[in-house]
Image 1 (cartoon, one colour):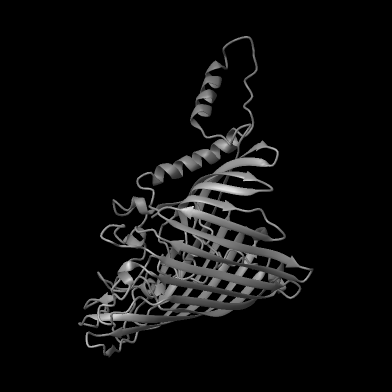
Image 2: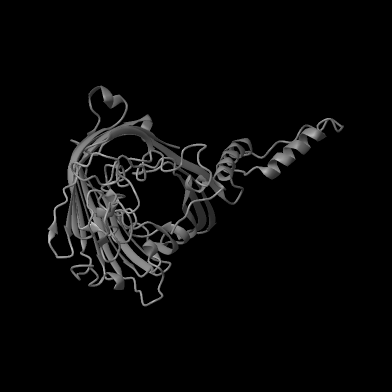
Amino acid sequence: MIGGLRGAASRLALAVIVSAVGAVAFAQKPAKAADLGGDCCADLEERVAELEATTVRKGNKKVSVTLYGKMNRAMLFWDDGAEKNTYSVDNSYESSRFGIKGSSKIGGDWSGGYRIEAEVRSAASEAVNQIDDDDGTRSGGVAGNESRLLLLRHSFVYVDNKKLGQVRLGLTYTPKDDITKDTDVTELEDTMTSDNHMNRGFFLRPKGFNTEVGGAGQLKWQAISQCYSSSSAFDCSTRRNGVVYWSPNWQGLNFSWGWFEDDIWGGALRYTKEWGENWEFGGGVAYEKSHDENQQNSGGGLNGFKRDINEWGGMASLKHKPTGLFAFGAFSTSETNDSNRQNAGVFTGTSSPDMSAWDARIGIQRKMGALGSLGDTSIFGGFLNINDGIGGACGPTRSCRPGTFPDLAIQTEITGADVDRWYLGFDQSMVGGYLHLYAVYQHLEPDVDLVDSALNRVNEPLDDFDLFYTGARMYF
């Protein structure tokens, strides 16, 4: 799994600041002081030489370097049916981050380069909940939490050929990563995607249970709305260490394939194309096979355990450019054949069910009225469903001990779940698209299927969850 950057967080941030200053200060070759026939400027030249030796330059004659990133902060207003509050969060739909890219011409159609990127994890919206408004990362806060402030996202090198494609080695995207969002022609994925990144860290609340929730073993929203390989239901893959090939674009179509430790492989097709003067289309489909026995803390491959997860995902989006009207759809499936989940239900003796999810959205994106001088205005709404996303609920045997639901004092088996989400959103592009203001409302309805030791259905209605978030993101 990808871990945080421990106590080096502050040093890495300082290094990036120094790099940026150095890039400006030494982008041009420093001019030496005029020779006045003496040593009057020797001290100055010596000091400049010292700074040059300790400052990261903007590349060199062979390698060009780019510093890039984004900030994406939001105010989150939430209501879990009994408690409500307002948090200041980092928007996990597209988190704040910074990185460095480098590239160099090798010759002909060949080039090479690298990328290193870190994500800011201060009060991540996907991790806060009713009892923790900062995800344990309060600024200047608890000793030992420094490692949670930054997360390494990319660290890879590549060789590229304009005609043959690109091969990457290191920590990078899998082909399936972002397949349900990265060909969206509206480019609204930084405002909201199909996953529940604003409330998945919150604890589920039984109806009528109006005291504090949140304790060891109690279920969170992500426990009933995820695939078997990760804590998401749509963007189920992620960045991993391995090797991946990305083909060149051919009439808008490209292919990718990769292998990643410790034995995950997959492939994807992506297509984006303008159809004549009026239409713009984007879509993709991907498959991933996982035999990673350490994934989700499974305990490795000893004692006969075998990992076997199959997952599909995809999306399509279409926009009518003259009117700005658009439609979007996404799907995701997750199937587990893990040896410890076959016929393992503690009471039913059944295997874990397949997860499926879909999302449908419509909207309009164009310059509107007085806001037109600022940029495109986007207004959208939709509905999604996640069925049997119980990959994080009560372990392989799906045995929920007493207290898993705080109002239930008996052991149960979770046999299924269902999550519906209605949503409405607004996004205003400004400053040539480098600044966006947004506001989104979501209403979520959960349902769980439980049985007791006698295989009787256990009635456990859960509270709906309402949230509204508004914020801004800026690219640099």
